[in-house]
Amino acid sequence: MPALAEVIAALEKAYPPELAESWDAVGLVCGDPAEPVERVLICVDPVEETVDEAIELGAQLIVAHHPLLLRGVHGVAADTTKGLLVHRMIRAGIALFCAHTNADAADPGVSDALAELIGLRVLRPLDPRPDGVTGIGRIGELPEAEPFAAFVERVAGALPRTEPGVLGAGDPDRVIKTVAVSGGAGDSYLRHATDAGVDAYVTADLRHHPAGEHLAATGVVPALVGVTHWASEWPWCGQASEVLTAALPGTVDVHVSTRCTDPWTLRANRPAN
Image (tube, rainbow, N blue to C red; front, side, top):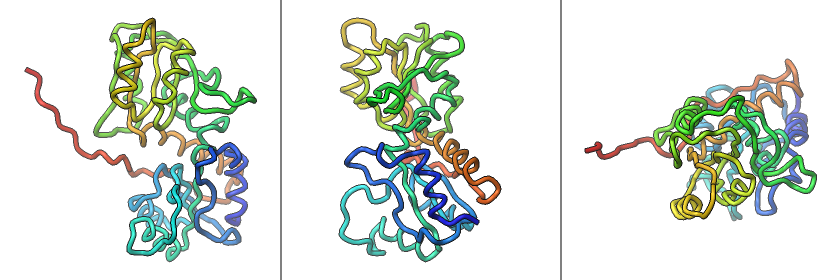
């Protein structure tokens, strides 16, 4: 069995910590780098459900996309939500490693996984860094052009099911060929998608005013596809699993979390008249 330090080295090679935004908190949260790792659980959110899953699996490591302790903390008392998770993991001998904006910007990274699942051929980053390779988001193209209504169905069929589902904003008959994607909250990149001249933009957490102002802008703008934050980033779990399997073949048992940690669990709508 590899030591935790070896597993971390493989993850940091794929998702270099120097790619993380200055405000981010990535890397090892708890755990002893010298301890052996036999089983790993990969998930989007380090929350009660995924800690339960790791304990049930007998995992020694959780690899999560979202940080547990993103903002400054002064303690991890067990009578707080996050403190309790830390205590539970330590008591169970489970380490926690987080790869957040460094996984977003890496090549391949979070948006590559999203693009691949949708069926896009990636062309370039949406918001490239100076090297032109890494960066946030991706621009890709479909094998064949299709109507926007069919494209929205494509996205819904590719991503894991959530109660909110997938929303589309645009002409159902508009022809879609080039697409920008950004895993996670991406309405700050609406201008990048417009400047790129793509036909559609897929992202999560689209807010009312930025989306409305985007659609009302003069000229041709990308149609919008809104998905939940968790669903947009869950494809990365499979990518991270492949990273560890390739780096540590036959020495570590890697599992992708099967538990939906999207916060929305019910949906209701007034019947159409």
